[in-house]
Length: 430
Ligand code: ADP
Ligand code: ASP
Ligand code: MG
Image (cartoon, rainbow, N blue to C red; front, side, top):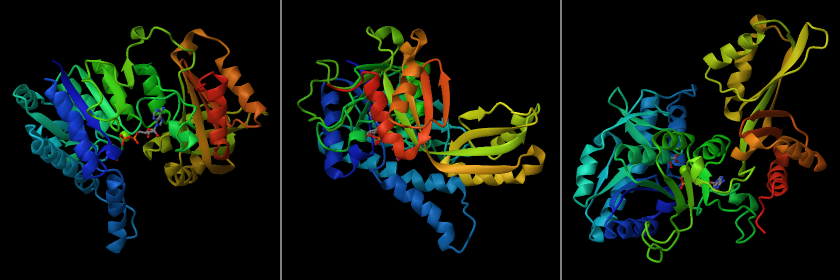
């Protein structure tokens, strides 16, 4: 008998039929004698609709300001998960399984004060543990907690993954199963090849290290929220990504035969380590170039200080060598959604920075090659550069770390670049 946390994403709870299907998965584990807590997302599309309403409300009420109260944003967008947790509890009860829904504040799952992107600070799992011990399934609304101001706080988009891993750590679960609309973590996003069955060349990974998954998620693979992987790594939560669309009754209970899926685990559990494990990509990157910036000490601080104050996330930074020793060019990337804010911040600081002109390009994509094996293998980067050059793809910027290489290119070449790299590192399915 094990203690399990099972998390189901938006597509898995998209309508009542699918919620019933989820309930069958939960009942399977419950009937096998496991103690179960479930975490659910809102129905797919629901959170987008709610966010949209939040954005529209001030305009409809006659305000030109694009601002709203973040505490109210959280009160609104958290509501999608309230509905699905209640519906799943009803589905389970209707199937004879003792179940109870839990909102973030009822657990309580305590967060910090950053509404809209709150971090979990503490979970009191005692009540849930006691009830699970009595055979009751806890159905927890994902994505939400309660802030120090006693108000609902949400964990950022995709945050139900983080709720699930945090609850798994909080109730000392043996495993956290993330059920989603793909049957595991792949060498790259399998949707890159469209929806035609069999067209995808991506391969499912049986196992991936926490570190590689953290890089993949941070670099655009949205199958898990970045923070959930961090938490899993810190607390050593064994996390298994699998499909909710498998027939609940044709799979053995989780500790029996291995269902298809990907285990995220420590490096020493992986016997055969490839040099490159996967390719991730992030769309919606924007490039900003400052032309003829004065080349003197303190210039980077003068540029990036105001951007940090404006909460703009700067990513890749390239500073050219100055030709005459007095001026140079500086190029960096920001998320496209921050581009306007970044440019107006730089324009407001033009005098203190000292540059001639700011240029920007919103349509960039960052493609990244990830693999723990890069630590011990040379030449991984040059293989990527050569393969992209052969396809005529121009590289705008490069950053590297011990286990990844990120390359900035024009968005028109995104798919070609990912497919090219996927193939050149031998990741294509035969
Ligand atoms: P959920 O609603 O269950 O949380 P998400 O849409 O957030 O699901 O995440 C699952 C999606 O992540 C998949 O449909 C897939 O398109 C995408 N994805 C991106 N990169 C990968 C990858 N390397 N492996 C698997 N899925 C990936
Ligand atoms: N419903 C939230 C979102 O769409 C949280 C989640 O699905 O993980 O971002
Ligand atoms: Mg998700």
